[in-house]
Length: 160
Image 1 (cartoon, rainbow, N blue to C red):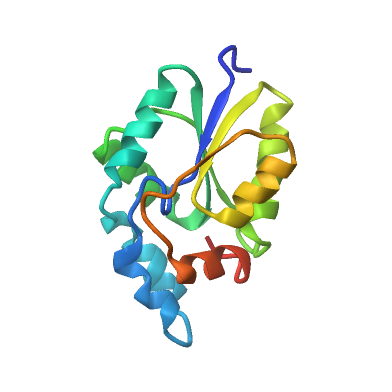
Image 2 (cartoon, helix red, strand yellow):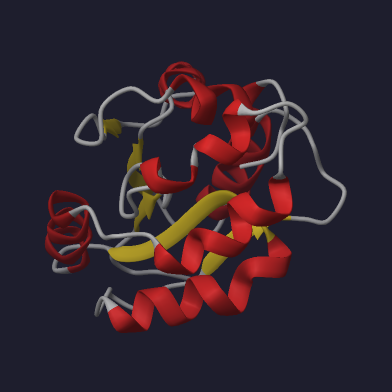
């Protein structure tokens, strides 16, 4: 239960700059293992980190990503290295390849049963539309720019 309610924040393209590893998704066949293994080397997106810190002043932060569960330790280490606010981390369960918007809506609805979800910060326009249509307020994270390979991974491949 959260008395302050939640700010729910995505990782890839919001906090972490994934552009250095997108080449693994642009090739055929895609190299998912290398794409996710290199996540620990993502440079931070300063505006995303600043946004998370500011939201943590008002809300309890929850991180919600389509990243697979098997890179939890690397993700948590990356959070510590970049001094991100503490908060629960929800990752994609093993074997779940649904589009990102379906996975995220399921988690948001579960969170909302415990406290209000005040804002969802995400870079995926399909996630943003679905979340907004479900009645959640959104903050579009447009600061990394467009990454078609990432959008395909999130919504067609169900991988991030």
